[in-house]
Length: 188
Image (tube, rainbow, N blue to C red):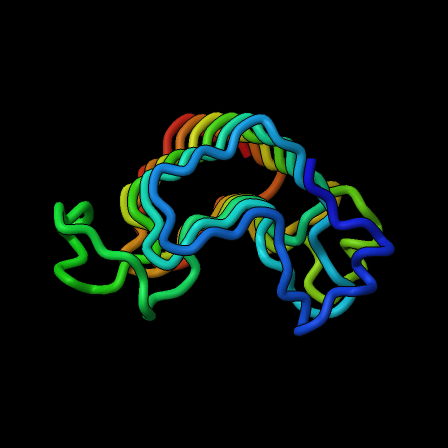
């Protein structure tokens, strides 16, 4: 259980640069059976409850409960920078272009928002699951529910994002932001 409490929230600096689990250049990490909650600030946009980027690879995020975070799960974030690279070329379509996350599975998570403080904050509930410059990601059997509309329930962004988004249940929109996703069996 990882939680940002109301008293802890008052101590956050630097435009709310805080999150639950935030890994750079990690490979093969498994984040399973956790409760991570409360990562938001009145001003600024918090990091994700679970976030892997800067060339991370083969992340498994499954069976977590993620209540009242500005952002739930994130694979990738940016389109350039210094990230880990791999000699076996796990994303041939990139052809040497920067990839922020390779592979990965986001499965059977419950992301929800119902906190009035979160909704009243500067950015509110931003995204349940975000894939940004994530090549080969799979998002399956998740529930993303909110009592007020987020920016997106599940989104895929940037040209090198290539994902499968299968059998998810969401209360609000699945959002294409310039990536590629194969969708099937999702209920909105």
